[in-house]
Length: 258
Ligand code: F6P
Image (tube, protein in one colour):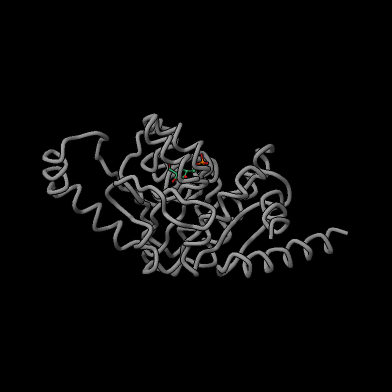
């Protein structure tokens, strides 16, 4: 019974990868939206995927923030650093979120669990364009930005537009705009509608969604029935080399809508 269940999940993954137009989809049984154990298993899967795809030698891994990333970060293991030098960098500048779910924190956490190194990007929110320019000119900031641009792996999640707008304390008029333009998903600071059209962009330094094409491996981690529509929307613009680690609940919902 277990074998046939595993086989079903594998076939479902292939169908979903084909439907979403990406390289691969790995499906973890259950609903990570309601069971934290499922999220933990998604983290273990991330660890396995990284161990398989990371080349020996040096790798720079750019990581995004969020609660999913924070949860999966703790599942990485020191095994990943065997014959490898890993450097974790935050994919984008601070997004005004609480400390525990900022990309800087997640990089430190991922490095601690995988015996790797990390760099932080210290660029505060809401600074004047002049201060921004001088900060970006600082050697320490510039060197982290260079490392981000050289990342060979990117790990990120996908959020629901409404949830993300609230979490980032966007203004009433911005939220209204997102509603009018029917935004359903957010990733890398871009808000998308169901067709994958960019309806709003949050300008930030660091990795832009358009930079993903030149990154060898992109891993997206997002699950839960509630995120099904957001996942589907973002996958319309995801680069083909994306590997999605998701759960059964989101997968079934996406394939049902097909
Ligand atoms: O804010 C960083 C971020 O990675 C967003 O780009 C993404 O939409 C979100 O976090 C996902 O957050 P969560 O895992 O909490 O749903």
